Length: 278
Length: 347
Image (cartoon, rainbow over the protein chains, first blue to last red):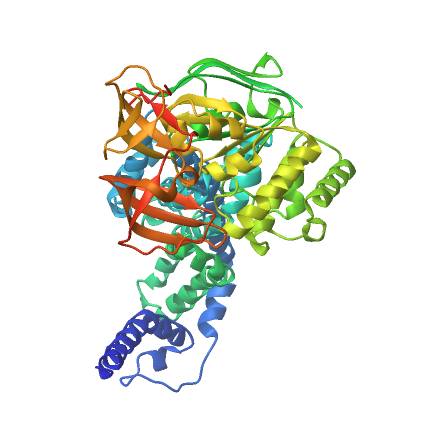
């Protein structure tokens, strides 16, 4: 009897190790490849020990266009995240607390929109894009920002909704009796208590906007290209420049990692909210 | 200080009416307790007074001014919630000063009034703490401090002691009462605990099923209940109720035992009510079987079966009884009540 739990633990550990390898393996290969030259990269036997080179990074970073791609990516990711959070917070609060006509439809519709994969909406979005006639770098960036906001809103609303639900209604009523206007109730009581929710939503929406490839590829011209699309530029007629693709990939991961590490504690709180009673 | 008047107050949710015409007045400086079982409408009534629920019909007056459509902040009331509803992201001082901050009171004035209120409730050294770093009793005090700091016309308390343990509840009961007497602020206090009501109130309003069953001073309700509901609700342990019939020369209980009391209408069925402390073990009584004996030290509580009915006896003596004993019980104490078995009204 006493042996059984240990066997289960071993199985669990083995599973965890396999999953961890599956998750980190590609990242490891990307990182290592980014430091390899063309010869080491294509060696018949995978090389564990090699002379690292920063050539790939210097090509990527000193390309004049890299700054532009970086700015474009930061622009759409940060602005769409800010707009998404502002809209999602108030929408989540309204759906959770206010009684209005069509509330059920809005909340269920919201969940249903969430189920549609982004690739499915690529064609209709392209049709809209053509009709509205976005052109020029900043028009296209704003357009992309708008679509990312629309893409991220349902999830952000759904996430923040569960945070609002956790806040006891007594607090709002106490604030009302204390003399707060509805806006003050939100700003002074609800908003500070939803901060961790906002942090979680910010990370998710930033990462989706930051990494998005398909819509950005379809919709943007040369000047409004974002980093994930720019990688495609390394698929040339002369061949695939794997080293540079991997270097760019590694660079793209860094901002997401930094944000995630900074907000790790908030994320953990967010993912476990409601997990225990009280 | 202000007075509060309810006039023919009704509340409906859709087609369901939960308050059926409430009429009573809380005088200036009075400590009035609304008591009743869960779902009787007492909290709804308090929330309507606070402005958190709309009025379906009738009127609520504070200081003779109708406040039906006045927003909560303009009613000059302060409320203590069952959950305390302290803002978790603010310190004790910020919690207490929140209403003043919203009202645009200058910071030094807020600090002075918060300091003063903290002194009254004994929380001066905790002003910089957050609610999560306080015990249940301290949180309760902060909630009261938040009410005191506003110096309102009326204090509203919604079951403020139900989250505390028994010992702390007794202590806080006394503290709230002392505080109210010291400040003299009109108070509406909701509870389901009749002991709280009896020990704290100047006046008790007993509610059931959305109507006021009876109101009056605690001992008046205890001694002269208007109906069977109030008789059973006020007093712990509850009053005993036994079926009886009016016969020549008195009442005959269902068990056959006679109670000498002149009553009119021979043949009428009645409900005989007697408090546990007026039932005694003694020669000449009817036989009852002991079910449970609960020695409380200063008194003994005995649960019996009398005929088919349960009967509770409370004695100051240390009775040496054990379950299964058959004892004679006397119920001829002149302090008893008769109720109509159908309407429940006092005869």
